[in-house]
Length: 291
Length: 344
Image (cartoon, each protein chain N blue to C red):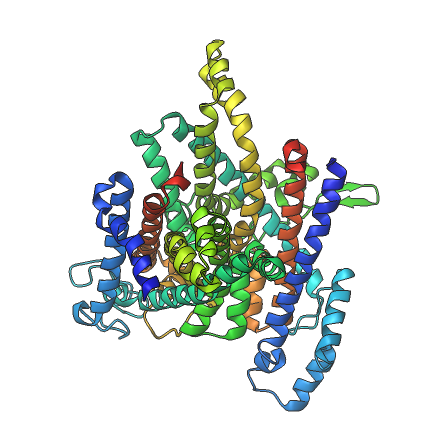
Protein backbone atom coordinates (compact mmCIF):
# COMPACT_ATOMS: atom_id res chain seq x y z
CA UNK A 1 0.00 0.00 0.00
CA UNK A 2 2.70 2.45 1.10
CA UNK A 3 4.73 1.48 -1.91
CA UNK A 4 1.89 2.09 -4.28
CA UNK A 5 1.28 5.52 -2.82
CA UNK A 6 4.93 6.51 -3.13
CA UNK A 7 4.96 5.36 -6.76
CA UNK A 8 1.79 7.26 -7.61
CA UNK A 9 3.16 10.35 -5.90
CA UNK A 10 6.18 10.26 -8.19
CA UNK A 11 4.06 9.87 -11.33
CA UNK A 12 0.98 12.04 -10.82
CA UNK A 13 2.57 15.48 -10.82
CA UNK A 14 4.23 14.67 -14.14
CA UNK A 15 0.91 13.59 -15.66
CA UNK A 16 -1.01 16.56 -14.30
CA UNK A 17 1.36 19.08 -15.82
CA UNK A 18 1.61 17.36 -19.20
CA UNK A 19 0.39 20.22 -21.35
CA UNK A 20 2.44 22.78 -19.44
CA UNK A 21 5.70 21.07 -20.33
CA UNK A 22 6.04 22.33 -23.88
CA UNK A 23 6.73 20.08 -26.85
CA UNK A 24 7.40 16.89 -24.86
CA UNK A 25 4.07 17.27 -23.07
CA UNK A 26 2.20 17.79 -26.31
CA UNK A 27 3.87 14.80 -27.94
CA UNK A 28 2.69 12.65 -25.01
CA UNK A 29 -0.84 14.04 -25.25
CA UNK A 30 -1.04 13.46 -29.01
CA UNK A 31 0.32 9.92 -28.67
CA UNK A 32 -2.13 9.11 -25.86
CA UNK A 33 -4.97 10.55 -27.93
CA UNK A 34 -4.08 8.26 -30.85
CA UNK A 35 -3.84 5.18 -28.65
CA UNK A 36 -7.04 5.92 -26.72
CA UNK A 37 -9.04 6.58 -29.93
CA UNK A 38 -7.86 3.29 -31.45
CA UNK A 39 -8.66 1.34 -28.28
CA UNK A 40 -12.13 2.96 -28.11
CA UNK A 41 -12.71 2.25 -31.80
CA UNK A 42 -11.82 -1.41 -31.28
CA UNK A 43 -14.04 -1.70 -28.21
CA UNK A 44 -17.00 -0.01 -29.92
CA UNK A 45 -16.51 -1.89 -33.21
CA UNK A 46 -19.58 -4.15 -32.85
CA UNK A 47 -21.83 -1.09 -32.59
CA UNK A 48 -20.26 1.23 -35.13
CA UNK A 49 -19.43 -1.28 -37.90
CA UNK A 50 -21.82 -1.02 -40.87
CA UNK A 51 -21.43 -4.77 -41.63
CA UNK A 52 -20.30 -7.94 -39.88
CA UNK A 53 -16.51 -7.80 -40.40
CA UNK A 54 -16.26 -11.57 -40.94
CA UNK A 55 -19.29 -11.92 -43.23
CA UNK A 56 -18.34 -12.61 -46.83
CA UNK A 57 -20.01 -11.25 -49.93
CA UNK A 58 -21.67 -8.32 -48.20
CA UNK A 59 -20.71 -6.41 -51.32
CA UNK A 60 -19.09 -7.05 -54.70
CA UNK A 61 -15.51 -8.41 -54.61
CA UNK A 62 -12.63 -5.89 -54.98
CA UNK A 63 -14.87 -2.86 -54.89
CA UNK A 64 -12.76 0.31 -54.64
CA UNK A 65 -13.73 2.80 -51.91
CA UNK A 66 -17.15 4.30 -52.66
CA UNK A 67 -20.21 5.69 -50.88
CA UNK A 68 -21.52 2.32 -49.74
CA UNK A 69 -18.11 0.85 -48.82
CA UNK A 70 -15.99 3.84 -47.77
CA UNK A 71 -12.78 1.74 -47.60
CA UNK A 72 -13.74 -0.72 -50.35
CA UNK A 73 -14.11 -4.50 -50.17
CA UNK A 74 -11.56 -7.34 -50.37
CA UNK A 75 -11.35 -10.54 -52.42
CA UNK A 76 -14.08 -12.17 -50.31
CA UNK A 77 -16.44 -9.23 -50.65
CA UNK A 78 -15.91 -8.28 -47.00
CA UNK A 79 -16.35 -4.67 -45.94
CA UNK A 80 -12.91 -3.17 -45.21
CA UNK A 81 -14.29 -0.38 -42.99
CA UNK A 82 -15.83 -2.91 -40.60
CA UNK A 83 -12.61 -4.93 -40.68
CA UNK A 84 -10.53 -1.85 -39.88
CA UNK A 85 -12.83 -1.03 -36.94
CA UNK A 86 -12.43 -4.41 -35.26
CA UNK A 87 -9.03 -5.55 -36.60
CA UNK A 88 -6.96 -4.20 -33.71
CA UNK A 89 -8.33 -6.39 -30.96
CA UNK A 90 -5.85 -9.27 -31.22
CA UNK A 91 -2.85 -7.00 -31.59
CA UNK A 92 -3.85 -4.95 -28.55
CA UNK A 93 -4.45 -8.07 -26.47
CA UNK A 94 -1.11 -9.58 -27.48
CA UNK A 95 0.78 -6.34 -26.78
CA UNK A 96 -0.89 -5.80 -23.39
CA UNK A 97 -0.37 -9.40 -22.32
CA UNK A 98 3.27 -9.45 -23.40
CA UNK A 99 3.93 -6.17 -21.58
CA UNK A 100 2.33 -7.64 -18.46
CA UNK A 101 4.51 -10.77 -18.67
CA UNK A 102 7.61 -8.63 -19.18
CA UNK A 103 6.76 -6.49 -16.15
CA UNK A 104 6.07 -9.49 -13.93
CA UNK A 105 9.28 -11.28 -14.95
CA UNK A 106 11.76 -8.59 -15.95
CA UNK A 107 11.27 -6.07 -13.14
CA UNK A 108 11.54 -8.40 -10.10
CA UNK A 109 14.51 -10.25 -11.56
CA UNK A 110 16.20 -6.96 -12.38
CA UNK A 111 15.56 -5.59 -8.89
CA UNK A 112 16.71 -8.69 -7.05
CA UNK A 113 19.74 -9.50 -9.17
CA UNK A 114 21.17 -6.00 -9.21
CA UNK A 115 20.43 -5.35 -5.53
CA UNK A 116 21.94 -8.64 -4.42
CA UNK A 117 24.91 -8.34 -6.81
CA UNK A 118 27.52 -11.08 -6.93
CA UNK A 119 27.01 -14.34 -8.78
CA UNK A 120 23.24 -14.02 -9.15
CA UNK A 121 23.69 -10.69 -10.89
CA UNK A 122 26.42 -12.05 -13.16
CA UNK A 123 24.38 -15.08 -14.26
CA UNK A 124 21.18 -13.09 -14.82
CA UNK A 125 23.05 -10.43 -16.78
CA UNK A 126 24.74 -13.02 -18.98
CA UNK A 127 21.44 -14.74 -19.81
CA UNK A 128 19.63 -11.45 -20.44
CA UNK A 129 22.48 -10.02 -22.54
CA UNK A 130 22.57 -13.17 -24.69
CA UNK A 131 18.85 -12.89 -25.42
CA UNK A 132 19.16 -9.13 -25.94
CA UNK A 133 21.91 -9.54 -28.52
CA UNK A 134 19.85 -12.03 -30.52
CA UNK A 135 17.79 -10.77 -33.48
CA UNK A 136 14.44 -10.18 -31.75
CA UNK A 137 12.20 -11.22 -34.61
CA UNK A 138 14.18 -14.39 -35.36
CA UNK A 139 13.89 -15.56 -31.75
CA UNK A 140 10.19 -14.63 -31.56
CA UNK A 141 9.57 -16.57 -34.79
CA UNK A 142 11.37 -19.64 -33.46
CA UNK A 143 9.45 -19.61 -30.17
CA UNK A 144 6.10 -18.86 -31.79
CA UNK A 145 6.65 -21.61 -34.38
CA UNK A 146 7.14 -24.11 -31.58
CA UNK A 147 4.49 -22.90 -29.13
CA UNK A 148 1.86 -22.78 -31.85
CA UNK A 149 -0.70 -20.10 -32.55
CA UNK A 150 -2.97 -18.27 -30.10
CA UNK A 151 -3.02 -14.96 -28.27
CA UNK A 152 -1.22 -16.28 -25.18
CA UNK A 153 1.48 -18.10 -27.16
CA UNK A 154 2.15 -15.10 -29.35
CA UNK A 155 2.35 -12.85 -26.29
CA UNK A 156 4.79 -15.26 -24.63
CA UNK A 157 7.01 -15.42 -27.72
CA UNK A 158 7.15 -11.62 -27.79
CA UNK A 159 7.64 -11.33 -24.02
CA UNK A 160 10.73 -13.58 -24.01
CA UNK A 161 12.35 -11.28 -26.53
CA UNK A 162 11.64 -8.06 -24.64
CA UNK A 163 12.19 -9.13 -21.00
CA UNK A 164 15.91 -8.18 -21.27
CA UNK A 165 14.99 -4.55 -22.07
CA UNK A 166 13.15 -4.30 -18.73
CA UNK A 167 15.89 -6.14 -16.89
CA UNK A 168 18.63 -3.90 -18.26
CA UNK A 169 16.90 -0.61 -17.51
CA UNK A 170 15.96 -1.71 -13.97
CA UNK A 171 19.46 -2.99 -13.33
CA UNK A 172 21.24 0.15 -14.50
CA UNK A 173 18.96 2.31 -12.36
CA UNK A 174 19.27 0.14 -9.25
CA UNK A 175 23.06 0.11 -9.50
CA UNK A 176 23.05 3.91 -9.36
CA UNK A 177 20.36 4.36 -6.72
CA UNK A 178 21.85 1.68 -4.48
CA UNK A 179 24.90 3.90 -3.92
CA UNK A 180 23.00 7.14 -3.26
CA UNK A 181 23.08 8.79 0.15
CA UNK A 182 19.43 8.36 1.03
CA UNK A 183 19.59 4.61 0.43
CA UNK A 184 22.65 4.46 2.61
CA UNK A 185 20.85 6.49 5.26
CA UNK A 186 17.92 4.06 5.20
CA UNK A 187 20.32 1.17 5.58
CA UNK A 188 22.08 2.91 8.46
CA UNK A 189 18.70 3.49 10.12
CA UNK A 190 18.25 -0.29 10.11
CA UNK A 191 15.82 -0.72 7.21
CA UNK A 192 15.58 -4.28 5.88
CA UNK A 193 16.65 -5.12 2.34
CA UNK A 194 13.05 -5.69 1.34
CA UNK A 195 11.98 -2.26 2.60
CA UNK A 196 14.88 -0.55 0.85
CA UNK A 197 14.09 -2.29 -2.42
CA UNK A 198 10.36 -1.62 -2.40
CA UNK A 199 10.14 1.80 -0.75
CA UNK A 200 13.40 3.51 -1.60
CA UNK A 201 14.56 2.01 -4.88
CA UNK A 202 11.46 0.82 -6.78
CA UNK A 203 9.64 4.19 -6.81
CA UNK A 204 12.66 5.78 -8.46
CA UNK A 205 12.88 3.07 -11.08
CA UNK A 206 9.20 3.29 -12.03
CA UNK A 207 9.50 6.28 -14.43
CA UNK A 208 12.09 4.41 -16.52
CA UNK A 209 9.94 1.27 -16.50
CA UNK A 210 6.97 3.27 -17.77
CA UNK A 211 9.05 4.62 -20.65
CA UNK A 212 10.40 1.18 -21.57
CA UNK A 213 6.91 -0.30 -21.38
CA UNK A 214 5.39 2.23 -23.79
CA UNK A 215 8.24 1.88 -26.28
CA UNK A 216 7.98 -1.90 -26.01
CA UNK A 217 4.25 -1.71 -26.62
CA UNK A 218 5.05 -0.28 -30.05
CA UNK A 219 7.68 -2.98 -30.62
CA UNK A 220 5.27 -5.70 -29.52
CA UNK A 221 2.64 -4.48 -31.99
CA UNK A 222 5.13 -4.45 -34.85
CA UNK A 223 6.46 -7.88 -33.85
CA UNK A 224 2.92 -9.28 -33.63
CA UNK A 225 2.24 -7.94 -37.11
CA UNK A 226 5.52 -9.48 -38.32
CA UNK A 227 4.71 -12.89 -36.79
CA UNK A 228 1.31 -12.81 -38.52
CA UNK A 229 2.99 -11.88 -41.79
CA UNK A 230 5.26 -14.94 -41.73
CA UNK A 231 2.24 -17.17 -41.11
CA UNK A 232 2.29 -17.44 -37.31
CA UNK A 233 -0.76 -15.28 -36.65
CA UNK A 234 -3.67 -16.00 -34.35
CA UNK A 235 -6.85 -17.58 -35.81
CA UNK A 236 -7.49 -16.48 -39.35
CA UNK A 237 -11.27 -16.11 -38.96
CA UNK A 238 -10.94 -13.23 -36.49
CA UNK A 239 -10.58 -9.87 -38.25
CA UNK A 240 -7.01 -8.66 -37.81
CA UNK A 241 -5.01 -5.91 -39.52
CA UNK A 242 -2.00 -8.21 -39.67
CA UNK A 243 -3.91 -10.92 -41.53
CA UNK A 244 -5.48 -8.39 -43.89
CA UNK A 245 -1.98 -7.20 -44.81
CA UNK A 246 -0.75 -10.78 -45.20
CA UNK A 247 -3.64 -11.73 -47.46
CA UNK A 248 -3.27 -8.43 -49.29
CA UNK A 249 0.23 -9.38 -50.45
CA UNK A 250 -1.17 -12.08 -52.73
CA UNK A 251 -3.74 -9.60 -54.04
CA UNK A 252 -1.25 -6.86 -54.91
CA UNK A 253 -1.00 -7.66 -58.64
CA UNK A 254 -4.74 -6.97 -58.93
CA UNK A 255 -3.94 -3.37 -57.96
CA UNK A 256 -6.38 -3.41 -55.00
CA UNK A 257 -4.38 -0.91 -52.94
CA UNK A 258 -7.22 -0.33 -50.47
CA UNK A 259 -7.07 -3.88 -49.12
CA UNK A 260 -3.63 -3.31 -47.56
CA UNK A 261 -3.46 0.48 -47.19
CA UNK A 262 -6.08 0.97 -44.48
CA UNK A 263 -5.19 -1.93 -42.16
CA UNK A 264 -1.51 -1.01 -42.62
CA UNK A 265 -2.15 2.61 -41.70
CA UNK A 266 -3.96 1.51 -38.55
CA UNK A 267 -0.91 -0.49 -37.42
CA UNK A 268 1.30 2.52 -38.15
CA UNK A 269 -0.99 4.85 -36.16
CA UNK A 270 -1.12 2.49 -33.19
CA UNK A 271 2.65 1.89 -33.12
CA UNK A 272 3.25 5.62 -33.69
CA UNK A 273 0.92 6.51 -30.81
CA UNK A 274 2.89 4.37 -28.38
CA UNK A 275 6.23 5.60 -29.75
CA UNK A 276 5.15 9.21 -29.26
CA UNK A 277 4.03 8.53 -25.67
CA UNK A 278 7.40 6.90 -25.03
CA UNK A 279 9.30 9.82 -26.61
CA UNK A 280 7.35 12.41 -24.64
CA UNK A 281 7.43 10.58 -21.34
CA UNK A 282 11.14 9.88 -21.50
CA UNK A 283 11.77 13.61 -21.75
CA UNK A 284 9.23 14.48 -19.06
CA UNK A 285 10.18 11.82 -16.54
CA UNK A 286 13.94 11.66 -17.11
CA UNK A 287 14.91 15.18 -18.12
CA UNK A 288 18.53 14.42 -17.31
CA UNK A 289 18.71 11.58 -19.82
CA UNK A 290 17.89 13.88 -22.72
CA UNK A 291 20.71 16.33 -22.09
CA UNK B 1 46.09 -3.02 -22.56
CA UNK B 2 47.50 -3.63 -26.00
CA UNK B 3 45.25 -4.27 -28.94
CA UNK B 4 46.22 -7.94 -29.00
CA UNK B 5 45.33 -8.65 -25.38
CA UNK B 6 42.08 -6.71 -25.81
CA UNK B 7 41.17 -8.97 -28.73
CA UNK B 8 41.98 -12.09 -26.73
CA UNK B 9 39.88 -10.89 -23.77
CA UNK B 10 36.99 -9.96 -26.05
CA UNK B 11 37.05 -13.34 -27.81
CA UNK B 12 37.13 -15.17 -24.47
CA UNK B 13 34.10 -13.17 -23.36
CA UNK B 14 32.18 -14.18 -26.48
CA UNK B 15 32.53 -17.89 -25.81
CA UNK B 16 30.21 -18.21 -22.77
CA UNK B 17 27.70 -16.00 -24.53
CA UNK B 18 27.67 -18.24 -27.60
CA UNK B 19 27.46 -21.38 -25.45
CA UNK B 20 24.49 -19.93 -23.60
CA UNK B 21 22.83 -18.95 -26.83
CA UNK B 22 23.28 -22.41 -28.30
CA UNK B 23 21.86 -23.96 -25.15
CA UNK B 24 18.83 -21.65 -25.20
CA UNK B 25 18.08 -22.55 -28.81
CA UNK B 26 18.50 -26.25 -28.04
CA UNK B 27 16.17 -25.96 -25.05
CA UNK B 28 13.56 -24.01 -26.98
CA UNK B 29 13.49 -26.22 -30.06
CA UNK B 30 14.22 -29.70 -28.69
CA UNK B 31 13.04 -29.73 -25.10
CA UNK B 32 10.24 -27.17 -24.86
CA UNK B 33 7.77 -28.72 -27.30
CA UNK B 34 8.50 -32.19 -25.96
CA UNK B 35 8.77 -33.91 -29.30
CA UNK B 36 9.44 -32.06 -32.54
CA UNK B 37 8.61 -35.18 -34.56
CA UNK B 38 5.12 -35.33 -33.12
CA UNK B 39 4.66 -31.64 -33.91
CA UNK B 40 6.03 -32.10 -37.41
CA UNK B 41 3.47 -34.74 -38.34
CA UNK B 42 0.72 -33.09 -36.31
CA UNK B 43 -0.01 -36.59 -34.98
CA UNK B 44 -1.03 -37.78 -38.43
CA UNK B 45 1.58 -40.52 -38.86
CA UNK B 46 1.91 -44.07 -37.61
CA UNK B 47 4.10 -44.57 -34.53
CA UNK B 48 6.48 -46.65 -36.69
CA UNK B 49 6.95 -43.84 -39.22
CA UNK B 50 7.63 -41.42 -36.40
CA UNK B 51 10.12 -43.80 -34.80
CA UNK B 52 11.92 -44.17 -38.11
CA UNK B 53 12.14 -40.38 -38.40
CA UNK B 54 13.48 -40.05 -34.85
CA UNK B 55 16.12 -42.64 -35.58
CA UNK B 56 17.15 -41.00 -38.82
CA UNK B 57 17.55 -37.61 -37.15
CA UNK B 58 19.12 -38.97 -33.97
CA UNK B 59 16.19 -37.73 -31.88
CA UNK B 60 15.74 -41.15 -30.23
CA UNK B 61 18.92 -40.74 -28.18
CA UNK B 62 18.88 -39.40 -24.60
CA UNK B 63 18.76 -35.59 -24.41
CA UNK B 64 22.25 -35.03 -22.93
CA UNK B 65 23.73 -37.10 -25.74
CA UNK B 66 21.68 -35.17 -28.31
CA UNK B 67 22.97 -31.92 -26.80
CA UNK B 68 26.55 -33.13 -27.01
CA UNK B 69 26.13 -34.28 -30.63
CA UNK B 70 24.53 -30.96 -31.50
CA UNK B 71 27.51 -29.03 -30.13
CA UNK B 72 30.03 -31.41 -31.71
CA UNK B 73 28.22 -31.08 -35.03
CA UNK B 74 28.39 -27.30 -34.83
CA UNK B 75 32.16 -27.45 -34.37
CA UNK B 76 32.34 -29.31 -37.68
CA UNK B 77 29.97 -26.80 -39.27
CA UNK B 78 27.15 -29.34 -39.27
CA UNK B 79 23.78 -27.74 -38.51
CA UNK B 80 21.80 -30.98 -38.62
CA UNK B 81 19.44 -32.57 -41.14
CA UNK B 82 16.14 -31.23 -42.39
CA UNK B 83 13.00 -33.03 -41.23
CA UNK B 84 11.46 -32.40 -44.62
CA UNK B 85 13.96 -34.03 -46.97
CA UNK B 86 16.84 -35.13 -44.69
CA UNK B 87 19.26 -32.92 -46.63
CA UNK B 88 21.96 -30.93 -44.83
CA UNK B 89 20.54 -27.80 -43.24
CA UNK B 90 23.99 -26.22 -43.28
CA UNK B 91 24.26 -26.53 -47.06
CA UNK B 92 20.81 -25.09 -47.59
CA UNK B 93 21.65 -22.16 -45.33
CA UNK B 94 24.98 -21.49 -47.05
CA UNK B 95 23.32 -21.42 -50.44
CA UNK B 96 20.59 -19.01 -49.25
CA UNK B 97 22.89 -16.78 -47.21
CA UNK B 98 24.54 -14.71 -50.01
CA UNK B 99 21.14 -13.33 -51.04
CA UNK B 100 20.50 -12.18 -47.47
CA UNK B 101 24.03 -10.80 -47.15
CA UNK B 102 23.68 -8.76 -50.32
CA UNK B 103 20.33 -7.39 -49.18
CA UNK B 104 21.63 -6.48 -45.72
CA UNK B 105 24.78 -4.79 -47.08
CA UNK B 106 22.82 -2.52 -49.40
CA UNK B 107 20.13 -1.84 -46.77
CA UNK B 108 22.75 -0.91 -44.21
CA UNK B 109 24.35 1.42 -46.75
CA UNK B 110 20.98 3.09 -47.36
CA UNK B 111 20.24 3.40 -43.63
CA UNK B 112 23.67 4.77 -42.69
CA UNK B 113 23.90 7.21 -45.61
CA UNK B 114 20.41 8.60 -45.04
CA UNK B 115 20.89 8.60 -41.28
CA UNK B 116 24.18 10.51 -41.42
CA UNK B 117 23.06 13.06 -44.02
CA UNK B 118 19.75 13.80 -42.26
CA UNK B 119 21.29 13.65 -38.78
CA UNK B 120 24.06 16.13 -39.68
CA UNK B 121 21.53 18.38 -41.42
CA UNK B 122 19.24 18.34 -38.36
CA UNK B 123 22.09 19.15 -35.98
CA UNK B 124 23.10 22.15 -38.08
CA UNK B 125 19.63 23.68 -37.75
CA UNK B 126 19.04 22.69 -34.14
CA UNK B 127 15.46 23.27 -32.90
CA UNK B 128 14.32 24.65 -36.27
CA UNK B 129 11.27 23.34 -38.16
CA UNK B 130 13.67 21.35 -40.37
CA UNK B 131 15.20 19.71 -37.29
CA UNK B 132 11.75 18.77 -35.98
CA UNK B 133 10.62 17.40 -39.36
CA UNK B 134 13.71 15.20 -39.64
CA UNK B 135 13.15 13.92 -36.11
CA UNK B 136 9.48 13.22 -36.89
CA UNK B 137 10.49 11.42 -40.09
CA UNK B 138 12.73 9.09 -38.08
CA UNK B 139 9.98 8.33 -35.56
CA UNK B 140 7.36 7.65 -38.23
CA UNK B 141 9.70 5.36 -40.16
CA UNK B 142 10.27 3.39 -36.96
CA UNK B 143 6.52 2.83 -36.54
CA UNK B 144 5.93 1.47 -40.06
CA UNK B 145 5.83 -2.33 -40.39
CA UNK B 146 8.59 -3.18 -42.89
CA UNK B 147 6.32 -5.32 -45.04
CA UNK B 148 3.69 -2.59 -45.21
CA UNK B 149 6.24 -0.08 -46.50
CA UNK B 150 7.52 -2.72 -48.93
CA UNK B 151 4.03 -3.41 -50.30
CA UNK B 152 3.31 0.33 -50.69
CA UNK B 153 6.54 0.63 -52.74
CA UNK B 154 5.52 -2.43 -54.77
CA UNK B 155 2.15 -0.88 -55.55
CA UNK B 156 3.56 2.54 -56.48
CA UNK B 157 6.90 1.79 -58.17
CA UNK B 158 6.35 -1.79 -59.25
CA UNK B 159 2.73 -2.25 -60.26
CA UNK B 160 1.74 1.38 -60.89
CA UNK B 161 4.78 3.03 -62.48
CA UNK B 162 6.51 -0.22 -63.53
CA UNK B 163 9.94 1.27 -62.73
CA UNK B 164 11.18 -1.61 -60.59
CA UNK B 165 10.44 -5.33 -60.34
CA UNK B 166 8.37 -6.38 -57.32
CA UNK B 167 10.30 -9.51 -56.43
CA UNK B 168 13.20 -11.98 -56.91
CA UNK B 169 16.90 -11.18 -57.41
CA UNK B 170 17.00 -11.34 -61.19
CA UNK B 171 14.68 -12.04 -64.12
CA UNK B 172 13.83 -15.77 -64.05
CA UNK B 173 14.84 -16.13 -67.70
CA UNK B 174 18.31 -14.69 -67.05
CA UNK B 175 21.26 -16.80 -65.91
CA UNK B 176 22.57 -15.64 -62.51
CA UNK B 177 26.03 -14.07 -62.84
CA UNK B 178 28.68 -16.72 -62.91
CA UNK B 179 31.61 -14.91 -61.32
CA UNK B 180 35.19 -15.19 -62.49
CA UNK B 181 37.04 -18.08 -64.04
CA UNK B 182 40.81 -18.04 -63.59
CA UNK B 183 41.94 -21.20 -65.32
CA UNK B 184 40.64 -23.98 -63.11
CA UNK B 185 39.85 -21.55 -60.28
CA UNK B 186 36.26 -20.35 -60.07
CA UNK B 187 35.60 -17.25 -57.96
CA UNK B 188 31.98 -16.61 -57.09
CA UNK B 189 30.63 -14.74 -54.07
CA UNK B 190 26.92 -15.39 -54.54
CA UNK B 191 26.43 -11.62 -54.40
CA UNK B 192 24.93 -10.82 -57.79
CA UNK B 193 26.26 -7.26 -57.94
CA UNK B 194 29.81 -8.49 -57.24
CA UNK B 195 29.67 -11.60 -59.44
CA UNK B 196 28.32 -9.67 -62.42
CA UNK B 197 31.23 -7.23 -62.14
CA UNK B 198 33.71 -10.13 -61.85
CA UNK B 199 32.15 -11.53 -64.98
CA UNK B 200 32.48 -8.09 -66.59
CA UNK B 201 28.79 -8.05 -67.46
CA UNK B 202 27.55 -4.48 -66.84
CA UNK B 203 24.03 -5.33 -68.02
CA UNK B 204 23.63 -8.02 -65.39
CA UNK B 205 25.10 -5.67 -62.78
CA UNK B 206 22.48 -3.02 -63.56
CA UNK B 207 19.76 -5.68 -63.52
CA UNK B 208 20.90 -6.89 -60.11
CA UNK B 209 20.85 -3.30 -58.81
CA UNK B 210 17.37 -2.77 -60.23
CA UNK B 211 16.08 -5.83 -58.38
CA UNK B 212 17.88 -4.79 -55.19
CA UNK B 213 16.56 -1.24 -55.20
CA UNK B 214 13.09 -1.57 -53.63
CA UNK B 215 13.97 -4.22 -51.00
CA UNK B 216 17.06 -2.39 -49.76
CA UNK B 217 15.30 0.98 -49.81
CA UNK B 218 12.48 -0.50 -47.71
CA UNK B 219 14.75 -2.08 -45.13
CA UNK B 220 17.13 0.89 -45.12
CA UNK B 221 14.37 3.46 -44.56
CA UNK B 222 12.93 1.59 -41.60
CA UNK B 223 16.38 1.41 -40.01
CA UNK B 224 17.60 4.94 -40.72
CA UNK B 225 15.76 6.53 -37.78
CA UNK B 226 18.24 5.17 -35.26
CA UNK B 227 21.16 6.58 -37.22
CA UNK B 228 19.49 9.98 -37.63
CA UNK B 229 18.98 10.26 -33.89
CA UNK B 230 22.48 9.09 -33.01
CA UNK B 231 24.25 11.30 -35.56
CA UNK B 232 22.17 14.31 -34.54
CA UNK B 233 22.84 14.04 -30.81
CA UNK B 234 26.55 13.30 -31.31
CA UNK B 235 26.95 16.17 -33.75
CA UNK B 236 25.20 18.57 -31.36
CA UNK B 237 27.70 17.59 -28.71
CA UNK B 238 30.75 17.80 -30.98
CA UNK B 239 29.76 21.04 -32.72
CA UNK B 240 29.97 22.80 -29.36
CA UNK B 241 33.51 21.65 -28.60
CA UNK B 242 36.54 23.95 -28.65
CA UNK B 243 38.38 22.33 -31.53
CA UNK B 244 35.38 22.92 -33.82
CA UNK B 245 35.20 26.56 -32.77
CA UNK B 246 38.95 26.79 -33.40
CA UNK B 247 38.50 25.34 -36.88
CA UNK B 248 35.75 27.88 -37.59
CA UNK B 249 37.93 30.69 -36.25
CA UNK B 250 40.64 29.76 -38.71
CA UNK B 251 38.15 30.60 -41.43
CA UNK B 252 37.54 27.10 -42.74
CA UNK B 253 34.46 26.57 -44.85
CA UNK B 254 31.42 25.42 -42.86
CA UNK B 255 31.28 22.21 -44.89
CA UNK B 256 34.87 21.37 -44.04
CA UNK B 257 34.27 22.14 -40.38
CA UNK B 258 31.14 19.97 -40.19
CA UNK B 259 32.32 16.94 -42.15
CA UNK B 260 36.11 17.22 -41.77
CA UNK B 261 36.26 18.04 -38.07
CA UNK B 262 33.02 17.51 -36.15
CA UNK B 263 31.72 14.49 -38.03
CA UNK B 264 34.97 12.55 -37.74
CA UNK B 265 34.45 12.49 -34.01
CA UNK B 266 30.75 11.78 -34.20
CA UNK B 267 31.32 8.76 -36.43
CA UNK B 268 32.64 6.25 -33.89
CA UNK B 269 29.28 5.77 -32.12
CA UNK B 270 27.68 5.32 -35.55
CA UNK B 271 30.08 2.45 -36.19
CA UNK B 272 29.11 0.76 -32.91
CA UNK B 273 25.46 1.27 -33.76
CA UNK B 274 26.01 -0.41 -37.13
CA UNK B 275 27.13 -3.50 -35.24
CA UNK B 276 24.18 -3.37 -32.85
CA UNK B 277 21.68 -2.76 -35.63
CA UNK B 278 22.91 -5.76 -37.55
CA UNK B 279 20.67 -7.98 -35.43
CA UNK B 280 17.67 -5.77 -36.14
CA UNK B 281 18.62 -5.79 -39.80
CA UNK B 282 18.57 -9.60 -39.94
CA UNK B 283 15.11 -9.67 -38.34
CA UNK B 284 13.92 -7.05 -40.80
CA UNK B 285 15.44 -9.03 -43.66
CA UNK B 286 13.08 -11.92 -42.92
CA UNK B 287 10.07 -9.67 -43.47
CA UNK B 288 11.60 -7.87 -46.45
CA UNK B 289 12.51 -11.15 -48.13
CA UNK B 290 8.99 -12.48 -47.61
CA UNK B 291 7.52 -9.29 -49.09
CA UNK B 292 9.78 -9.28 -52.15
CA UNK B 293 10.06 -13.07 -52.66
CA UNK B 294 13.81 -12.60 -52.13
CA UNK B 295 15.36 -16.09 -52.06
CA UNK B 296 17.48 -15.65 -48.91
CA UNK B 297 17.64 -17.02 -45.38
CA UNK B 298 14.50 -15.19 -44.28
CA UNK B 299 12.42 -16.88 -46.95
CA UNK B 300 14.09 -20.16 -46.04
CA UNK B 301 12.95 -19.84 -42.42
CA UNK B 302 9.41 -18.86 -43.41
CA UNK B 303 9.18 -21.80 -45.85
CA UNK B 304 10.44 -24.18 -43.17
CA UNK B 305 7.85 -22.86 -40.71
CA UNK B 306 5.16 -23.85 -43.18
CA UNK B 307 6.67 -27.35 -43.44
CA UNK B 308 6.99 -27.53 -39.63
CA UNK B 309 10.63 -28.43 -40.23
CA UNK B 310 11.94 -27.84 -36.70
CA UNK B 311 15.50 -29.06 -37.23
CA UNK B 312 15.90 -26.61 -40.12
CA UNK B 313 14.41 -23.77 -38.05
CA UNK B 314 16.85 -24.61 -35.26
CA UNK B 315 19.78 -24.58 -37.69
CA UNK B 316 18.80 -21.26 -39.19
CA UNK B 317 18.28 -19.66 -35.77
CA UNK B 318 21.68 -20.90 -34.59
CA UNK B 319 23.27 -19.53 -37.75
CA UNK B 320 21.69 -16.11 -37.17
CA UNK B 321 22.90 -16.13 -33.56
CA UNK B 322 26.50 -17.01 -34.48
CA UNK B 323 26.49 -14.38 -37.20
CA UNK B 324 25.36 -11.66 -34.80
CA UNK B 325 27.95 -12.69 -32.20
CA UNK B 326 30.68 -12.62 -34.84
CA UNK B 327 29.66 -9.20 -36.17
CA UNK B 328 29.53 -7.64 -32.71
CA UNK B 329 32.98 -9.11 -32.00
CA UNK B 330 34.43 -7.63 -35.19
CA UNK B 331 32.81 -4.23 -34.54
CA UNK B 332 34.16 -4.10 -30.98
CA UNK B 333 37.67 -4.93 -32.17
CA UNK B 334 37.44 -2.35 -34.93
CA UNK B 335 36.26 0.18 -32.38
CA UNK B 336 39.15 -0.58 -30.06
CA UNK B 337 41.54 -0.17 -32.98
CA UNK B 338 40.07 3.21 -33.91
CA UNK B 339 39.67 4.52 -30.36
CA UNK B 340 42.56 3.47 -28.09
CA UNK B 341 40.66 4.68 -24.99
CA UNK B 342 38.43 1.59 -25.19
CA UNK B 343 41.40 -0.66 -24.48
CA UNK B 344 42.14 1.01 -21.17
